[in-house]
Image (cartoon, rainbow, N blue to C red):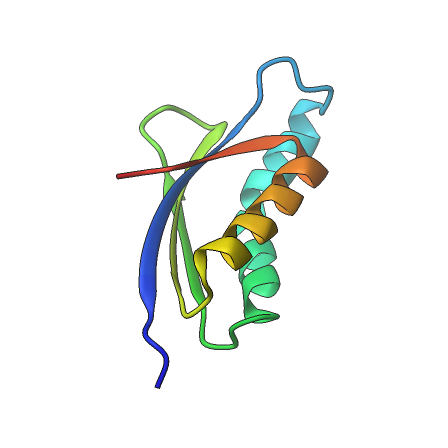
Length: 92
């Protein structure tokens, strides 16, 4: 039995990104399903929950429960960030 770990992240758009408002809104609207698909590739039991941040529309809070190791999680989040122009910050 693998142990599950909970992680919390803030996802927000980088200042000065070239993405238009519609594109940014689309990424944020599909954040949960997109990340769920990426994490499920390595951990079929992974769960991703997305909620609004108090910082506004361009910010979301992501709660992740997974058996993946830190390095695997970091790799997925780095690739997602690079592809979509978002910044992912761990919450304490």
